[in-house]
Each structure stands twice: as structure tokens, then as C-alpha cells.
Image 1 (cartoon, rainbow, N blue to C red):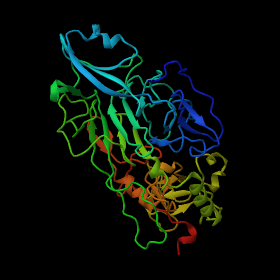
Image 2 (cartoon, rainbow, N blue to C red):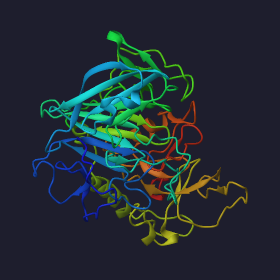
Image 3 (tube, rainbow, N blue to C red):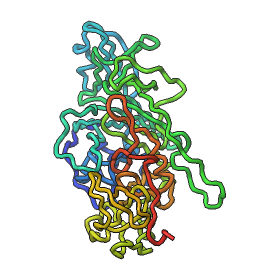
Image 4 (cartoon, helix red, strand yellow):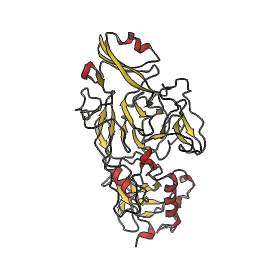
Length: 456
């Protein structure tokens, strides 16, 4: 069961640690220098919020962070459905007032409801995600602001549910399957679907339903980050985005509603499941999360590998053809320590990389400039390394950049995310940079980088 005795405030981070769920208490914590394998922990995977380049702009603290790592708990706290029954007044039902019992209440009318009771499941671990800072929530998620901007205060008009969704993970080391369900249990271990919520009867007089703005998922087609085989001459198959579906409170899969909060559910999709696979996207209507399974992360680049790619690039001492300065591509951590004239700028129409200078300004509203190399008019952006390894779909060098933000990543990575339709608004979709959530512009939404030493 979720531990309700832990403090809701942030915990003091340890230098160099990574976020995880403390197995004994279920609280957000940081692991120290020892790896999960060395300390005997079993890792399920990671949930990474799209739009953050390795951490929140104001820093990761406690249960509110850009990435949440799920480990097997020391003691199982999962639940499983046990029984359901109709009641006339759900607020007076014993299950609602029993804080030791998990239950879901489906209100059908003013005088009719169905209560679904859940019992302890020793074979699963329960993790909950939502906007609430109450103790049952393991991972606090707020609305994503594009551009890595600091949120000054909590958005009172947030469309993310306080108890958005829950994940049940199998504890068997030979089967670490994780499944997602809409809605999470509150501090009294209850879930309420009111009279206006979308719901319907299922077989054997059961009931299922959807939350107000829904929980959407999208499984990738193919392996999100396939292993690279240096001995093979055949490149690994490229993953492609899948189709967005909606997950019910009971874990069933449906097509999308006509709009995000429409009263009628979409068509059932029995051929698909709520099982998370490596690369599954989870949209909470205000924030989109990427699920990276532990086995998939083993194929992804490590932070040190990304740093080496950047070190190799900077070791080539690329120069600005105008100011003749040596350029230094910064990371998110050292961007403030790079001299202004040494910060590389990419011309987004052609991909030529130069330093910061005033030559060729066209004095228009977009701040366009004439590229000194090809003499084409182009908007520009500061180059910045994409530092979150979980967003990469391979381990190749970061030779491309997203448009218009300038975040660098590998060719396959930019091509994958440029084709991912991220939900926005009530029924819209738009591709965005995973490192800052800025909507991509132009076609194809990315550009190949051309440094001075490669202009010949």
C-alpha cells in the first residue's frame, strides 16, 4: 500500500545520484554511487517527461523531477480486483470509508452506483502519477511549458488530473511487465467517477470508464532503440511512431474520442493492450511522458557517451568563418561558461554553423540573417546538446538539430521525433522537440549541421 506517513516536501538530493522510488517506503529519493545491479535492486524502467533536457529548469527536487526511475519495492504494494457490487448511495458504502481498502466508485445516477473493491496483490508493485503532491502520488507531474522555462507558480487551470494514472509492475525477475491504468487512488485509497464521467457496463455486470481528459498512450512500431551490432553490415530497423489510443480506468484500450473530454468513448481496440513497451508515450493532457524499459535503456547512449561525442566535436576546434573564433558547443550544464562569441549558432535553413555576430542582419521581425557561407536568408538558433539519453533512438553522433530550438541529436533521433504527433489542446497534434517541447517548424523540422571544417 502507498505509504501515507512520508512528508510531502522535497528530499535533499545527493550529488551524482539518480531519482528512484525508495523500495522500503515508496518515497521519491536519490540513489547514491552504487548501481542498481550492485545494490541488488531490480529496475523496471524510467518515466521521462518530454520537454526537459536532463532536469527541470528549477532543478529536480523530491517527487517533482524530469525523470522518475522505477525499482522493485522491498515490499509489494500492488492491488488486484476482488469483487464488485451495486449500491444506492456510494458515499455511505463501507468500502469508501475503509482507509485500508482500495476501491473504485462508478456513479451511474443519483441513486445508483457500482463499487469495485481491490485487495492486496503480493505479485505487483503500484506506482502513481499525477499533479497532486499528496503522499499516494510517487511522481508529481505539472504542465510542461515549452522552452525549458521555469514555472513561477502552479497553474490553477491545469488539465492534468491530480491523480492521473497508475502503473502496476510485475515483481517476477523473469517477467517485469508494467501495465498502465487511467486514474490513481487518493489518500483514502479511493477513485471516484462521478455521474457525468464517461462510463459503461461491461460483462458480468461490471463497469469501466474514462477520466475527464483521458490518459492516452502510443506504442512505437518496432524496437524504439534497437541494439547496435558493429559486426553486422545491415543497419538496425528504424522505429516508427504508432497510433494514439486511450486507456480506461480498468486498463482496456480504446480509440480516441472525438475531442479530449467528449462524453462518448472511442471504439474498443481488443488487439492492443495497456502493457508498456520500451518507447511507449503516455499523454496526461498537459504533459507527455516517455516510458523507457530497463532492457531498452541498455541499448541507449549513456550520459558519458553523449559527453564524448561533444568532446570529439569540440576537439576538432570548429571555427566561425566571420569572427574566426573557435566555437565550443555547450551542454545544458556549462552553457553559462562559454564565451558569447564562442557559442555556435546554426542557420536553420541551410545548417551552417557559425559564431554569434551581427553580420548579415536583415532587420526583420524574425531576426533573420544572411548566411555568409551560402548567402541564403535564414533564421538562427543557438546550438545546444540534447542531453537526455532516454530520448535517443540510437547511439550515433549528434549531427542534426531540431528547428527552431537548435537542440542537437542524431539523425535517426531527430527524424523519429519529427514524425511523432504530440497531443495538444482538445483534439490537436503537433510534433515537438523532446528536449524543450518547442513545436517544430518548417519541413522536415530538423536540419543537418555543417561546421566550417566540413564546408568544402
